[in-house]
Amino acid sequence: MTLTFSRLLADAWTLFRREADLIGRLALPLVMLPAFAVQLLCDPLPPLPPAPRDQPMLEAWIAQVGVWGQANAIWYLLADAVGVFGLAAIAILLLDPDRPVVADALRTAARRFIPFALASLLVAIPVGLGMWFFVLPGLWVQGRLSAAFPLLARATRQNAAQAVRVSWRATRGAGFALAGAVVSVFLLQWLAIVPLLSADEWLRAPGNDNPLVLSLVNAAISLLGGAYHLAVLMIGVAAYLRLARKGT
Image (tube, rainbow, N blue to C red; front, top):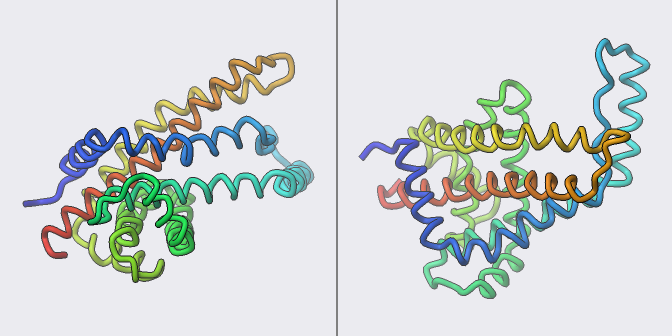
């Protein structure tokens, strides 16, 4: 049976619906809430100066970004680390053959956090580079490496580099199906989040202060961002299960 992006999305959605209660207990507090806290409590990244930009303007902006990073970067890193922990626990919950309860999945994720964090970093670097070039290469790489977390969840003796390498090798021939699935959820997220980002920028401008509405907008942005990462994980789990049945 040919692996298609529609079949991957259908598998991922079926798996999510079946385990939605357990997934929600982990995703909401560990993936989405930390992102919301950062959005709400940290200063936003300084915006690029308006065009036309000259050298002094760009140098001043870079200096502002440096000051922003010193004050806020640690909190973004901490939120990302908690998110990785949450996604690792979800992958373990879905794929561990012993079918652990939520508490067991959290303990296992805590014990194996370092391999999951390293795998997340190893995936993020090529995905980020691909996104810089033209977005689509980054999403294609993200699809090819989406089985890394499922591999770590299932093979306890595998390290991060091995999981990333095996994901790349195992998904050979399924790249377009995986890319199509990842692009689909990316576009859905993008269409929903763009107006929210514009609203966030407008609400932060002088004279437009409305803390309640800003909090609601930030909550929606965090929810969508977390939903995207969760969707990519579900696609990776669906691909892993399909490929494992094929003996890839």
